[in-house]
Image 1 (tube, one colour):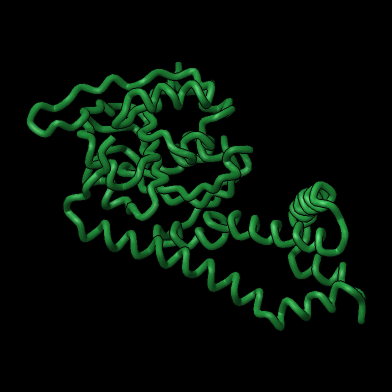
Image 2 (cartoon, rainbow, N blue to C red; image 1 turned 180 degrees about the vertical axis):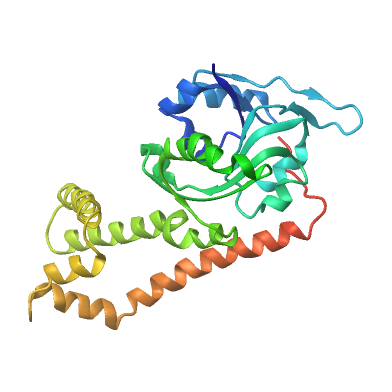
Length: 285
């Protein structure tokens, strides 16, 4: 018997997780909820989802949309401030949150559930190859292992690899290794394409070679360490080691570490910001 998954939000990460996700299609009745019903309908059409739009009633006293979450699974894909647009009634089975800067303690101010999961997927969820760090909190610890292996992991692994962390603060840390990492790698790929053009290749040739190089790199990295790969290519006094020397001299390694640290620190500051605010102001539709 299928369970119900209510997805709150219809942005890029929701699209990446849900599109062509056979697990979600097989195990869930999918419902899309948001502040703007027409955006939810457009989202379903764009992603070719077998889903319906949540027809929320409006609470007369607050003007907020009321969502019944009793016994359902919830995927939070909105911005933290977006939670203020809703009144969540009942106790959910499980809550999965990709909200950046929103701790479990903050989410618990708005929703109640048997278990809560914070996850940090990346855009490779589009290809079902996300590297996703996750942290979970279960109210009833006696069912912890069963919930982890029968519900949490299968859901996260439906769009990539799940890496469990034992401290919630490490969710923000994973921005350095996966969350923002693809954008950094994209910049490197773009630079290498430009390098190929500088050396005489045309744009199409350079793009094709760099793309396939990244595919091959990922396959090799699956069973070799970065150090092993580096030294396997670097002949004594050869071309590659000379290029690596220039990169080290230019501080590329340190720059990448600093960029990842800066992104992570921004997320940590967001956690602190939202944890000290009682009322968040959502944007209007």
